[in-house]
Image (cartoon, rainbow, N blue to C red):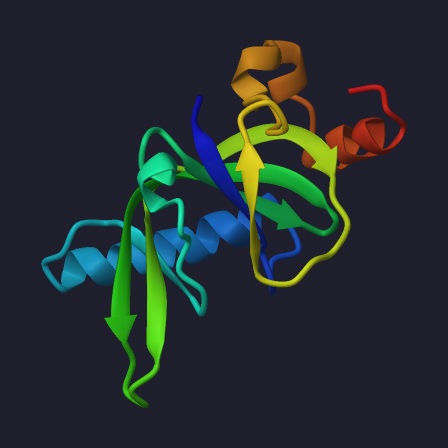
Length: 145
């Protein structure tokens, strides 16, 4: 079973905000001759990196609900300009929508087991995937989705 990370998507108010951020990062990378991966820098390095890189994803919490994930492609330790060790999470360019799942605020990232992770939205049927994001959020908050 895959192990995942979960993190608050600070600054994003919607899936569209996250998509725009990822798209801008990908275009910047492509224009520099690099692969279109997103790199998210964190302070702490996951100790279970091998498990995470075995089909793991980073799940994004947006406005109190898990709404999307990105595949984890690599985890790199780097030293920043101030000489402090950081962790770069290299993420795939695709945003995969998930079934909305309420999540309280927390700091940093947390591990997320495959059993706890929300299902991909596409796996819930076309009618659910076609719903507007706001409606899916409301239904999830009511426990109906």
